[in-house]
Image 1 (cartoon, rainbow, N blue to C red):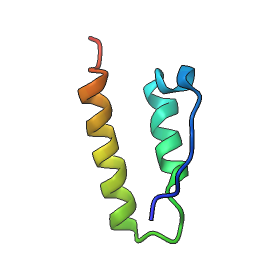
Image 2: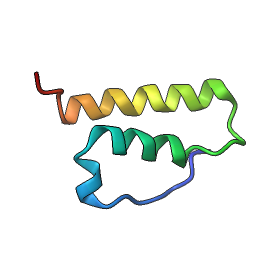
Image 3: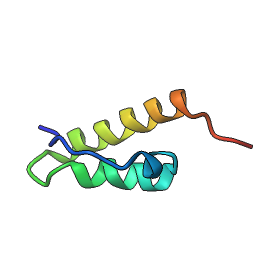
Image 4: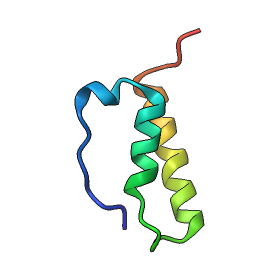
Length: 54
């Protein structure tokens, strides 16, 4: 299970900080495939909300 945590709003605007936060929120108890799927899904959601700027 992904553990609930909070992140300061200012940090949420920085994609690398955000992705690091998501990865850190996943515990080592999770199988690697689940951790990777969660990071992939969250990264996709991030790009839907905040598209990459050219």
